[in-house]
Length: 532
Ligand code: NOJ
Image (cartoon, rainbow, N blue to C red; front, side, top):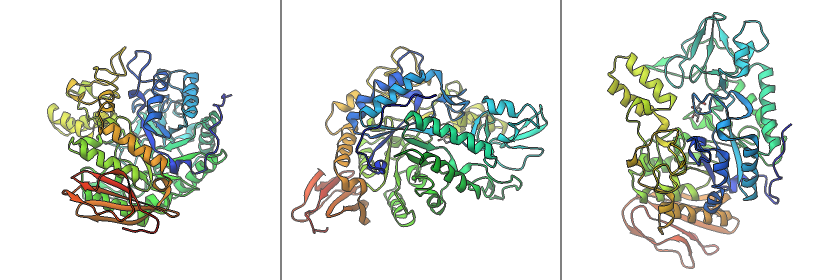
């Protein structure tokens, strides 16, 4: 029987998540305490004071359940067991209590599309065609043409029972069969287990991929690429989400954010509602491949016009290259301007750990250094297609998600945060140019800018829940006014040339300066009734 965490802090609203800035921690990379080179709950607890001082109100933890870590925890082998490398159940409870004590909520990454093939369910399932766990997974005599998200085929032949099982991701990550009511019940109980323990919600991994319908048809192929007509967004997915959300709603004040693999806003928006996912990640906005003020603006505008509900705001995660390399060409000024956008626009902001210090991408110099399964898979596919090992390495690096997963740089030492052992992932000294200690010491640094912006957002209800007025792009300046009751706060982010803003009479500057150089921003409050 799980022991509940201390009660949550009182006086909170049901929509606390609208008022919160979230911080994503990539589990193995935050703070080690026992010298095994992998971050753990005890180490992470010791860093909660820092997170509190940054002002964040929610933490998203990537998976920490028992796992062989083919995909660093996204391959769960035991849904109610903490992986021992991250500590004991008590270490986790202590982390949760200490976070709550500091007014910080904790949401877990919940992966229910697939399990590790090492999970007991799968081990039972593969034993014979007629045993009770067989239908927990998807077995067929013949595969169809579906592809794995990581590259290659999505079906694996198992000679033990002479059938193929379906895996949308790696061959060691078998898809659960969501048309089996027993699977649904099992997962409901898993959710309840963690909710009882006191977690504040979930980030539901690839939740629109759940396989709910008959698997018969080949996906059509257009211009050489497969169209996901039959494997994603199937009719039963919505019902599965409804059950998941209803289960979460058995508990007060919890929050669910859905990872939806789709670039279509009409698909994304259909999943966002209080009965399905509270909010969803929109990768059209969050993972734009390169900087464009126009593109960012267009995405903000589309979310406003075409996605009812509350958007999410992010420019980084463990699946994409770091913000500063991808969108700012290494320029801290641009990185700060993007932070200003993310922390003042309408939506729930998610900061990716280390982004607030300007942490950069790492690159694997040899295949031995590469851990990410997606990078490794592309290496093998490139070799199989006749590429040389060097070409295959560069192809693998293009897909390699290790880039943004290096250990948090707490200070200038080589393995900061991992001082008693080498980190789980190879880093080269040239990637250690920035660190938190240094960044905190310098006024106007990235970290201090994040801090000031979060402090402002935490103070100003209008920046948390205000609606938009005048969302505009003018000469590469993204501008908007947030309105809540009688209050109006205008934000101008200047990605264009230098310019000076004439403030309306009676305005109060909250942050920035009306003389805007490139990448500067200005946040000001209007006197009541004054509009820009
Ligand atoms: C999405 C996660 O963000 C990614 O890291 C993982 O590889 C896949 N889902 C599979 O679970």
